[in-house]
Image (tube, rainbow, N blue to C red; front, top):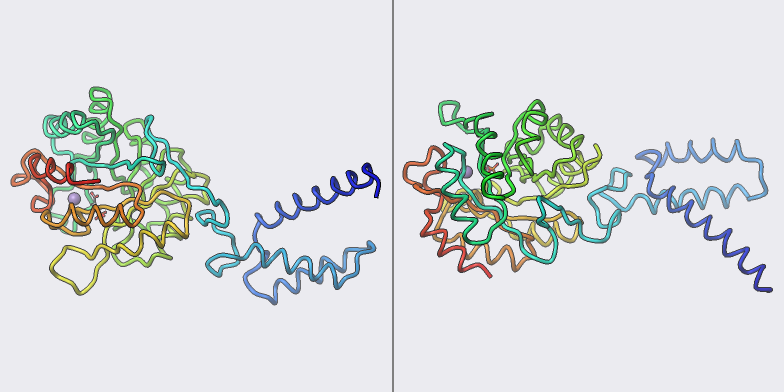
Length: 334
Ligand code: PEP
Ligand code: MN
């Protein structure tokens, strides 16, 4: 074969491969074989070229199969390693979540006042940390418990960002919060209770603000990933997953920290995975050990709550660390 003929064939075949690649990315036509058969019949009926029909059928079925390495729905999942093999790094305010370095998120359960949040911000800043958390909308189990400062809380957080140079993350609980909270926050948190609030997932998916999605307390790993898919499918690729414990019969911890979910998620998805040791354990005396376990299992960072005066905190008062406890916790982390 002459060089120029080989070059010509290489060019055509490369085009063919790139076209097949595009086709595979588009996913399957239907969920079941019957519809796929009808689709192939339609295709071959309309085709009058020289490629034998059996070959066309074989080729299209192979493309379907290549697209279908997923959860069984027939769609290649955007969260999957098959879709994107390299780790996704979510950039926030000059920090990287999911990169080489561990990126932690600490702060109070709720934003209670400017001075309470500023005290925490100053302490975190002094330790060289880059992100602060604090709930402005608190989805509490009882409607009579502190529900958060709402918009006032968001304003406090953006003031903290300005004054301390920390990135801020807070939970939003309704699609209407997206526009309201966007100027104030660097990361939207979707809480465990809202993991399957699909309208909320779609709303944050339409924004470009990074989203930290917490695992629902009764959600399987698969359901957790599908929830992330809702956000990705709307066009927002900046999603961070957060394991926060699941509900089991065990009563000695607030929830059961599912360490196995960490390597499972890291293998299944390219998205960063964090572990919240506060809500998963509810026990300050084991948080450092659990955080070490989470990092050893491959977590990209730890979330934990710290408050200047936990005894009088308006929410989660038993599980928030004091500054002294936090200092001990933080210096124990690898
Ligand atoms: C929180 O992090 O403030 C919180 C309420 O956690 P979760 O949604 O995991 O219960
Ligand atoms: Mn809390």
